[in-house]
Amino acid sequence: MKILIAEDHTLVRAALKNLLVNMGIATQVIEAGDGRDAVRKAKDFDPDFIILDYDMPNYNAIYACNIITVKWPCKPILIVSMHQTPEYVLEAFRAGVQGIIYKESPAEDLIKAIQTIVNGKTWFKGSVAEIVAESLSGNGEGLRKQTWHKLTVRELELLKCFIKGLNSEETAQRLNIAKRTVDVHKSNMFRKLKVNSTQKLISCAIRHQIIEL
Image (cartoon, one colour):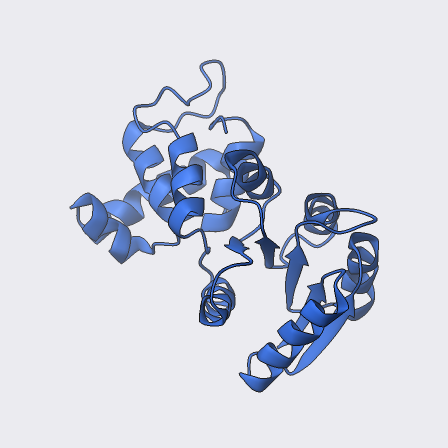
């Protein structure tokens, strides 16, 4: 897998590169020293996966991510951040990233995050998941009243689970309902928002302000 690492600290970037190569996660690592360089190399090298440090000169991760997700919407992006405040987490989430991990996390969590995202899930764990999930009103108050998109309270509950990276079976267990029921709700949400994947479902819900963050 070809991975782009955007990090302005040379030693940190080298450590990440060595970790990913030695663990057999990356067959090639492309390095970028700032956000502008990350955008340019995302275009030139077409990486399979992108890791962005939150704080970088010449475009921070959010600005770079907004450009990348518009031009190459299928690129999976993981943001590495030292910030743990809701404002930073939700800003990254709104940008359409597939995962957020804190710099203080153990190396094995980084590996798990990459593997999870590559397998089509998201990586919003621990306090990150709590921040994102709390922003979704479980009782429907987060629904924008005047919109042609309408999600039910149950659908919002499912959306919370999807954000935490749960699949349909895990979501069914969490909500104590049948997996087939989860799949039906998901299909209904796909139809309402005209998307064909869980990540697009989340991004579309935010973009159309169905869910207020």
